[in-house]
Image 1: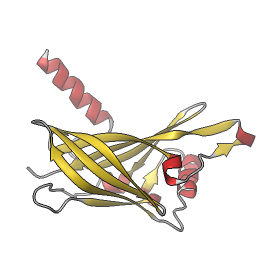
Image 2 (image 1 turned 135 degrees about the vertical axis):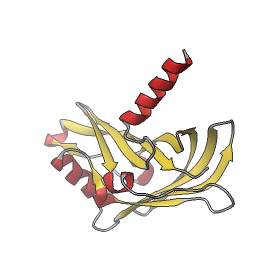
Image 3 (image 1 turned 180 degrees about the vertical axis):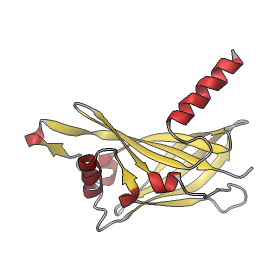
Image 4 (image 1 turned 60 degrees about the horizontal axis):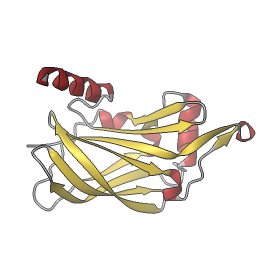
Length: 169
């Protein structure tokens, strides 16, 4: 049974493309479909993070490095986040606490455009990766979700942020 659970966990994390590497995905929904935007340059970075001492990580993502696997969706994603005026999305760890053998709680500051919001996020350690996710809203950052075709197709307010950080022991 433990073997089956381990294999399932490995496949789940591998499906996000996060096995032993960094990752940030932003997943969202429209009234007719879903979308996933990944920062490919960050996923391929060789950055290794440490949570020891009092220097907690701050990770800066270039909005133009996100790819939504659809040219029009990628363009709309960059436009709604105003990448020409605000080129970065920043995630800064404010607090980080161990709650179990491989479980952690963190307070993250997420900054998009000129708005910063703090979120409580639970993380798990898997294969030298710190993995966590948090549901946020466009409206948290004073962004009105886009509409197309006269409002017939619209993006829902919720977004899921999936994080994976490659860490030192």
